[in-house]
Length: 249
Ligand SMILES: [Zn+2]
Image (cartoon, rainbow, N blue to C red; front, side, top):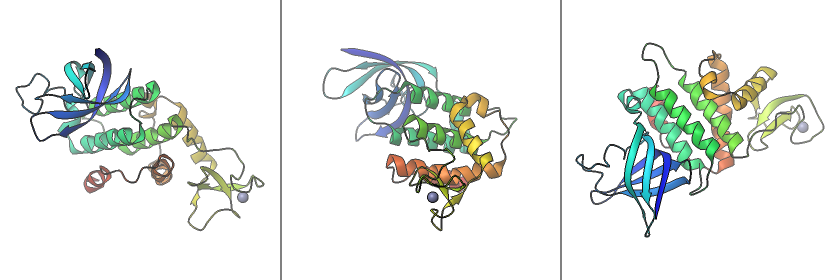
């Protein structure tokens, strides 16, 4: 049987021989693993599409134990991402997070569309203008929390005692706001401006968000909340590509 789907390559894993294992996030089948026979060799017709960031239409043979990539019609290789360290580090971060936050073979069109859009923004970056990378990562994290059903409770009510409406802290564990009495020592402060910003990033389209000027301090503050938040609620131990990202910034 053959299965044809649009997909983006999240990961290419080397094998002992000339083959590559590809982790695809596909429109019609969610996250799937396929083998690209001989793709390690540059002469292989599958070599060009067997790289992270490639977006295209994949023809897959589903007969047998392992799904096999037969051919791919590349829409966009997004090769520009690999030309610059900063875009590469951010791209790796997004792909890894996408891979870690998705279960195999679960169709999730919204998430699929989101990662394709985010990677597209990185690849089409105007070299003359700087791109707000932390904002792109933050927007992805906030949308990811929302898509996976872990959106924080942002109502003006303490999520621990349910009694106080004077909420000034954010609790990663509770996934919501806390009053001064319930907040542990290391609780992160939050205010109305930041809450509005979270809502904005949750709802607006990435392409609009990335054109919006947002104060660097707000982004950094929310990153300190949402990165551990997503890790905690999705049960992710670590994001390996973070080291590379931190080493260049
Ligand atoms: Zn309370």
